[in-house]
Figure 1: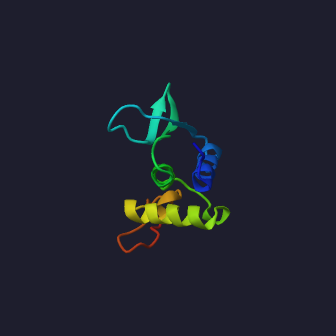
Figure 2: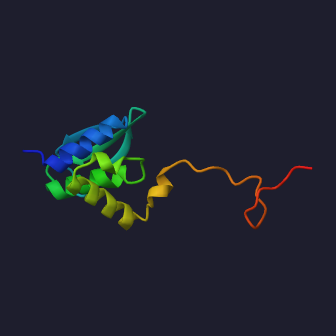
Figure 3: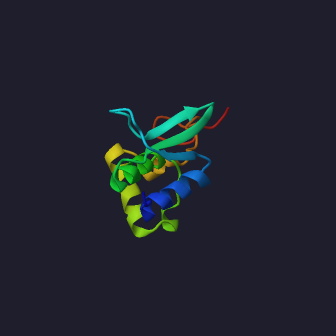
Length: 114
């Protein structure tokens, strides 16, 4: 089965982020693609028998909460990732590490130590 260019691009991004991606046929009815742990390592399983759209959507769902540079993506891949983030309720600022709020008063001003 030929792999869609967007699927190929999302697989490459997942692998660059350290995720192993396995595209193989699921012969079990009701099995879904997604992130799992195999022998202690994170792995993305994608159903080879699913449509290209379903494969790309599954990969985008896994990548949505991760920090991915959208400027390095093709337009269709960036659009799909943005759409999945919106649908899943993941905002781009949610993907970056945030500073702690310790040391702020209720109005958000920095507390001074005395």
